[in-house]
Image (cartoon, rainbow, N blue to C red; front, side, top):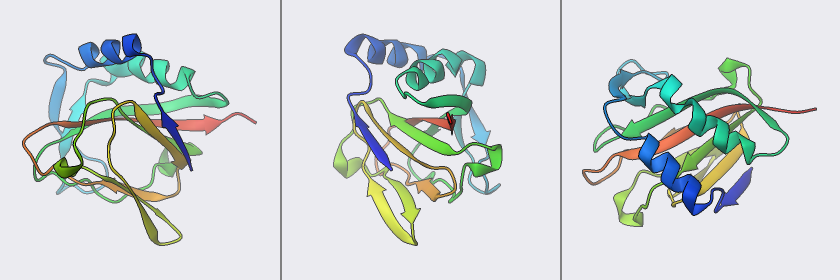
Length: 154
């Protein structure tokens, strides 16, 4: 597991923030549990964001991506990302976030949770076979993550 602080420049963060606005959001995306739909950003509109982030991760290629949103009461479902044939997952947080807002990412390694509080311009890279899920925010804000499914170059 690797952690990345300040992955993007201020200008790149501004690009991401401006790109993830407007009417390109839809509700009803299902990860693994049909009873737990979440928000999802239009995949093709989000492609330049995914490509920007993967360009900062040397030694990896982009397999797939999702830009997800969760609001109060919308916990994610525990899942792995290995079903898509990728070797690694990368979760990136780009927005300002307060600890008391919840929305933590839980990654289970050897049946023990590693709990990550969202931080602006922070990402975590991990083995795609690890079970993980995101808590819902405890306040009425949209928690946005950019999730990449990656393959490590050999």
